[in-house]
Image (cartoon, rainbow, N blue to C red):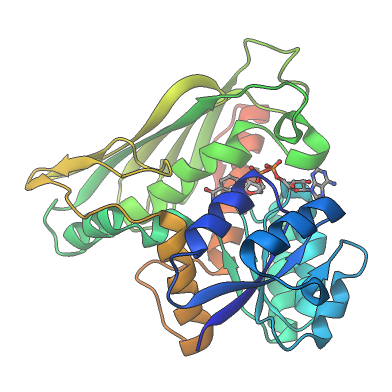
Length: 334
Ligand code: NAD
């Protein structure tokens, strides 16, 4: 069977997902949810979604009665995910939710609970967790090819444009660069080291307080400590171009990836040579794999479960607390 997906929020990233899904073997778009009637019409024509499967933000709860939809993929601004995912769960559909899953751990917890209570799956759009070169590094680490892991560096950032976009609005974004792009370094630290951190320290720098208002971080450096003694040193920013690099080092070897999380080919090398899996659009692999997780109960190599998203939200909360207090924060992600 094929996973029949409703896309919610027909913006920039949904466009990438929709295009990539055209090459999926196991997932297809069967419904659309948008507040803009002209987008429903345009996307409906382009992706062959009939009008009876068009919804808006007021009436999408009715999707409950639509047997042509298995899952709803929420691709809206961050602060909307919480209520929308809970409504998806109540409609009895599986939820796929973009990162960050919410704007804090408390909301993330409520989303996980709502999906559990409704008996539906909650998966987070962590596309890197399915990317073949990334998984090759994970395999090498698991096979001991780098030795005991000691250090990870994750540098994630871009220079943000239009000052009026929702990403720079605390209400809709929930924060700044950390929520949007720094989360790749957080999530990456976890899958590259293969453990969950137990403490965090963090420092914030703001050079443009007009563009980056109160509660919207421009640049944050943070450090994570792991149970076996590894440390991660990461940078999240909205004010540097082309910052997209992961570096992992163990007692015996290393992996370096640049770009490490961008949409294009993931490039890099290890002590054993170049990473050389061919590029497939990340969202194509992601949606085919999510179909297997939802329809066949497949356990992926790296989990994208709501609980993994919730753990990232706990780390984000702790990083903001560490910035505000200047104090190291202990983490309990169990
Ligand atoms: P976008 O601004 O391009 O699209 C957002 C869409 O939400 C727009 O179509 C907008 O009309 C709609 N929307 C619905 N209600 C809204 C409201 N109240 N206010 C503003 N817009 C509203 O943003 P995007 O880049 O597509 O990001 C959407 C989500 O996808 C974010 O959570 C983002 O973090 C995530 N994202 C993930 C990736 C990834 O690689 N996994 C990449 C980009 C974005």
